[in-house]
Image 1 (cartoon, one colour):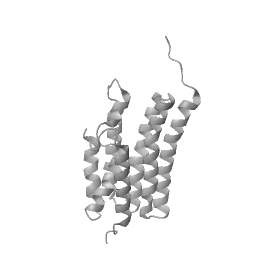
Image 2: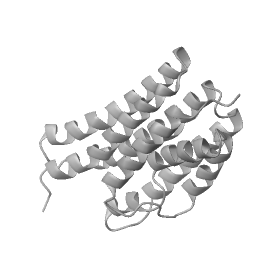
Image 3: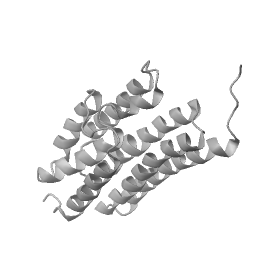
Image 4: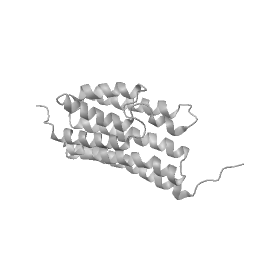
Length: 193
């Protein structure tokens, strides 16, 4: 017995949200290059919000697909690994070696969880420190340490590859609150002299 394929729009809509998240994050890189202010964090927040809704939309519509799972991982790599690393490097908040190691740690995390042999594919994304969590915990820790972002993103690069849970499963509102507090602290912390 073959399984019926979902209507095209049921698969298309969540993937459009996923691509939009990557596009917003890349727009953040452009903002960092052209403007270079800390407001860039809002681009990454918007990308994290899109990442938080694309999967639930796909499941609700019955539009989950192998393409969507891979697309989500690639978008997370861009939105939570490569784009923040480049933006923070351009803004001179991260050194080149730390930016590279951080982006590669996010890639490692996403690949490792994408290839796990779990009978429930959705469960693998709730283990460990998620890619968006790494961005915000890195920004929060860096600001709290007196703008020491190389140290904080080095720590988060390590935490990204260790299967460790920071936030409990289903804690989207808690995470959103932590993200918003982090944005406030990041925007109000004085740049290093």
